[in-house]
Image (tube, rainbow, N blue to C red; front, side, top):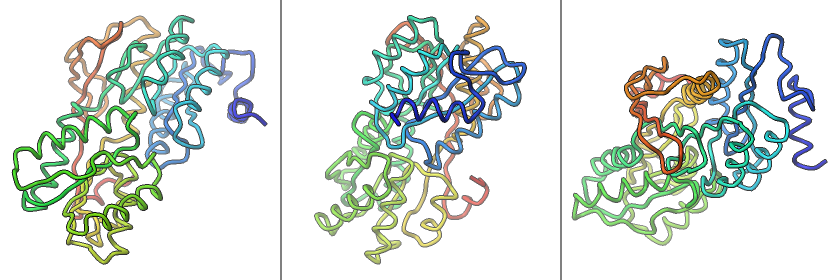
Length: 334
């Protein structure tokens, strides 16, 4: 069975019927489909909770979420092509590589489909890009925590899901800019790619530990980077001797926070991001304006800023970051 046919089969199993737009949910007259970087990852499982919750709260809208079996922009593009053919009303997408999806998203817009992106503030072919916060500030925030843990001195490195993952690169750049305040900090082998794979992050972290046995800090980008790095540090018996700060979720990261293999994580709630993406898509479908200072009714997005995007669309920015460490990660049950 081809990949596209598998997607269609999955859609049918969820109550969708080919040739009928996507949705046949009782009472639904609009369809909003979310496309994520990879299916099955904890981050996007949590996001799907928000996607489903929006559908429950708004029975006139049928919502669903799909993602490729591995983090691959080409596979995301194939899913979106299928959704265009099925004439969904709106597509919300978290691109693996925004530039790689420009063509297919333009085709969606040309067909009258509303497009909402997330983590893609360089996307030209989107009506609205939603950012949980200013990305360089978020990266600087990671790095300031890392610097304090390192005593503001020593070698450190950064990880990204991929060099095409715009927000991850922005966080790494924001971290590097912040570290320049501290002459004693030295960035080595920046922007290691994990491809959203904890095993790849683990192997890369082991490689860096061999190459730089005196390294003092790691800044993670993908939500699973800290898991791979933490595992490598535990195996090397370096808990508490090397600082690790990065994107992560509390349930996944808890055991490494407890062991001292990582010192802290930051995140925004993917469930809330799923809600906000779908809410913005609904506003677009209703022809409503999204304005500066608007309250979207979701924590962290109660007073959003709105600015012109690089294309015809706008960028909506929230204040949704959350910082946790060993002392408070249990306050967030996901």
